[in-house]
Length: 226
Length: 174
Ligand SMILES: Nc1ncnc2c1ncn2[C@@H]1O[C@H](COP(=O)(O)OP(=O)(O)OP(=O)(O)O)[C@@H](O)[C@H]1O
Ligand SMILES: [Mg+2]
Image (tube, rainbow over all chains, first blue to last red; front, top):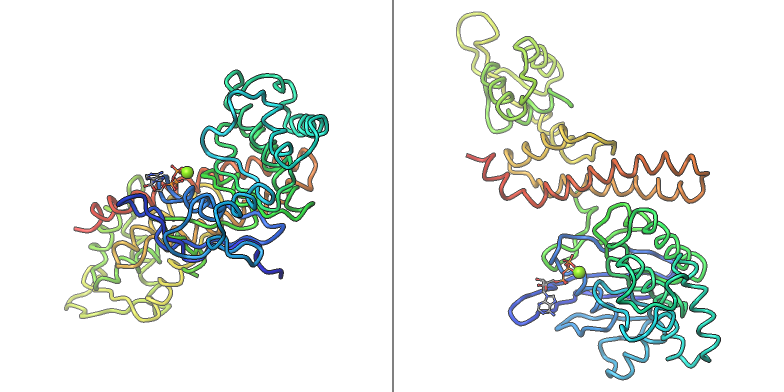
């Protein structure tokens, strides 16, 4: 088996007096989909943000492709995030002033792709998610589920090596939720992306290769009772 | 669900008479289906023959109501095995799982472990069905989806039960 692409080991993180993570672990290999589950407030989003280098842990290590994320400068870390990672966040993520198409094209533009090429690729991704019809609308003028699918398109458009998705199907009905999960598992199988997926829906988690459960800020090994 | 194993669980805290066992069972698990005396004694004699229980301090006089039953080491081993093993994941296991969780609380075992073991078994089957869906035709997909929705309902019940364990412990333990 290949070595894990991303490892978060014994991560601790507090917000003021609230210990959100109290020794959590997560690792994912290239081509693997890992589901992160657990009760509300248990620390799933915090773990995702620490693993992705968005939040710095108080202690513990996060390594990506052998390099320690936690030791990089802020600038290097954000550059790495932009070039290697894709994100679907749990809350408000599309730029309200841009159209849906411009939102999806944005990561490509930031990476230096020409406007016309970026727009063409972005439209292909919107179509893949069945949302080509909202391309010209602003995020405020589309439904919650449409907005979520636009965010998924934006996360996948650059072909990231690691995709972080926090409740990416929370606003979707079963049919569209499956569509999103198919695209995630396809990008893992076809382009070897690693996918970290936070979800509270067992049917969504069943698309993953394995699951990590977070309780009270700690990851639980479900096999321990065997 | 196995009445024999449930009786073993109730015996673990100490020897009991048959009628006492029936009362304890009905109170905890009998809700709509209390045990018949005949059922209790036939189950106990089967456990006796299997060496899972033994008689203790038989009081003078004949009749089953005079006997006190105690769990043996072999009985504890069987009980341990049952409580530690996941049920074959299929819908409508609530009855068995509820019994296992209450017995764990009564006998000082980890109810969390029982729920987690079952959760892992359910999710493993759901992953298999999800993979089968991606290769099957539309009919396969619909059949798998039906099973997946039912398994998901069970898993959600497991999660809710785990969240309510503290309250359940207070209710179950005197
Ligand atoms: N920015 C923040 N400031 C203060 N406390 C925070 C912050 N973010 C998270 N927390 C706290 O940290 C704990 C873990 O939060 P987190 O968002 O990681 O939970 P979660 O598992 O993602 O929950 P949910 O399923 O509801 O999204 C909670 O107690 C939360 O209130
Ligand atoms: Mg969250």
